[in-house]
Length: 297
Image (tube, rainbow, N blue to C red; front, side, top):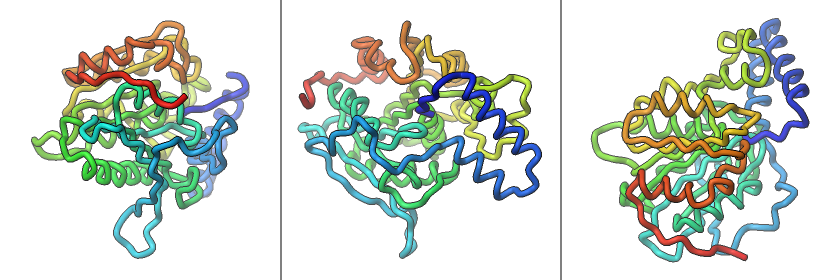
């Protein structure tokens, strides 16, 4: 839920207003639309700090489904020079589209990964105006199918989700069927247990968010079904989503797993504040040895 809010007081007013309105609303369609707008806050325009598509990125559009008029999602494939490099599916959070996440993608490139990132429907150049929980799950599966063909070795495939993207990543990882491995690891950063819990953390604990919200994003229920190593990361100074959410996800996840709580890190900067400990956690948990390298200027 990569949000930039002016203050907690404003967040309380906005989200409390939505929840109260939801409880009083008589039109289900109107309620659902308002809730989805507040959950995703999709942005079509480029981030203010974006300077253009990074060198080496292959842009593409993937159809979601097989229909002739299937909606398309916009994607970036940022391949490493090593064709055998591990590949990570990058699933971003709310508000900013891919153009606002270049720096975090660069960090994964520095750690030796090829990066495949998408904008859900309603974000950036992808089709549609307003995402939903189910649509985001479908978009992630579409992206995964493409990346799995590009990197056929399951032991070299990873899933990363930040904030709201963490809930989407957990759903994807928990949905793999059969005993054969589909990926070698799941990385969830600055995420939450359920959307209702996140709403209560932003507003008041006594609000009946669980009963009112139609978008569930119940990661706590799903993460126990994940059959791959799980790395959970959270900044201990996250004032948007408290780190106790990641601690609860870690407790519910099956082994092998690792929890990295980063001192002095906020919602968006754990990767940089943790510095080498982030890559060390990846190397140790996933038994991955890749050479860090410089990427870009």
